[in-house]
Length: 291
Image (cartoon, rainbow, N blue to C red):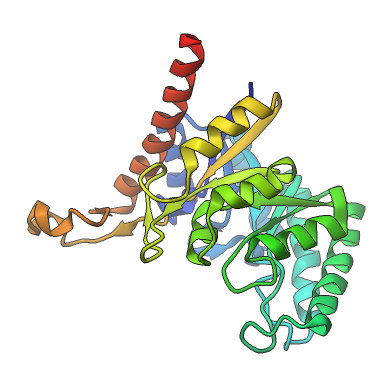
């Protein structure tokens, strides 16, 4: 039986970091995947700003499940050194923040979908450099399957994880696979033993629209049941709502929205995303008791 621990991209609830901490407390969560704070991307924080954030995290009793960085969201056509400098700074931020993981990506091709052997070799070269630096800093790199990057489908994710072995973690994002036309349960069948943690984000195969967990085609309840049956360790579930916030919602008729999930503000959308996950976990717990 797995021990599920909830985290979140709380910048989707509020751009203000103090508000993010307050909202996490309201939702009963003690982990955050830090992506944005006070309107700034985590990778752009100064070391002094990071120290202030660390003080606030410690005071609130909130830990970092990962630094939700944009590293690797960078085209192969651009020189690597400038990106590498930002990555080195990110490792310094991890030291100050106490982050042991960095969520990252595997680069965009120089030309759309141009994943020939030369492009693959350059992806592997760049990731090798980043992994070596991260290992020296005591930080684990965790690759997310983002649409358009090298590792956006099942086969290329498997390629990366096979090539780097246990050195590279895997942040499984069901909605991102759907948006690439890939069924998440099929990826889970291939790579379930390599999952480091999961982004809780669901979507519809028809148009890629993001919905609450369990409301789409991401097989989120089934995947969590499988993990619960297979694993006996801690698994972090990071809520990433990406839900539609529509300010004019209250002026529309219910029937006009029946095929979409829209919310009047970010806080309401965040709560809906967290509640949907908690409902799935509650169902799993009930099923265990019934057995």
